[in-house]
Image (cartoon, rainbow, N blue to C red; front, side, top):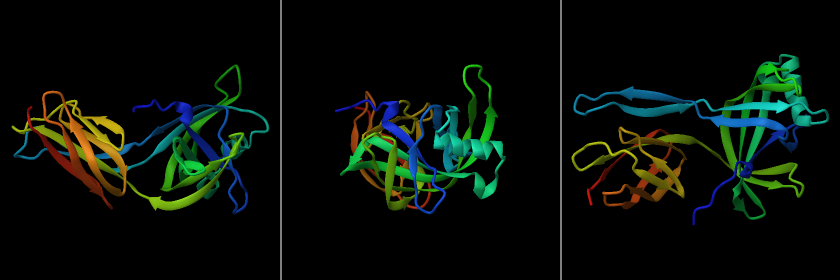
Length: 244
């Protein structure tokens, strides 16, 4: 059964500790926390094929942020210190824990921890409240694990499971004549993707083996046993749909 995941179902916590013991506090009073993968693309045209083929070869993840400054908010205080004192290098690094409340694990939830470089942009551009904005840019791979959130939802503890690499999987869907199939729906572990006009869609997947991937399109025979293995590099998966 499909269920809508609300924006509040994925929450960010920042480590504000000044010691080796992490202290993850919920990132509150933010008006924006939006993620962009910023993929690096490799496009080319083969002499025996019509149209261009594109693969994604890397990522430079970025999280845009903006917040209304509140006194006593330790997360705000940490970012203001970086911005006002124009800190660089390791002094501008922050650890952000992203907790997915739609994926419960025992007494906690699935979470990903990654280190970002803080790149401030603007401040004080509102007449209603003093604001800061900028971006967190990827500085490391991420670690997947379990987060246990306090009853008041303000703090979290993190137990790492493994460091996970993400890789792009490019699906190319064609019909029996070799023509691209647009708007073919590919469903992987409950998440669906639609191909574009060239029959291509890119999914960002953890390094793992995936089976029972469903590929469907009205007028074509559904495939529900597509498999792909993601190990240590980008993957290109070609799929042919037969007309029903």
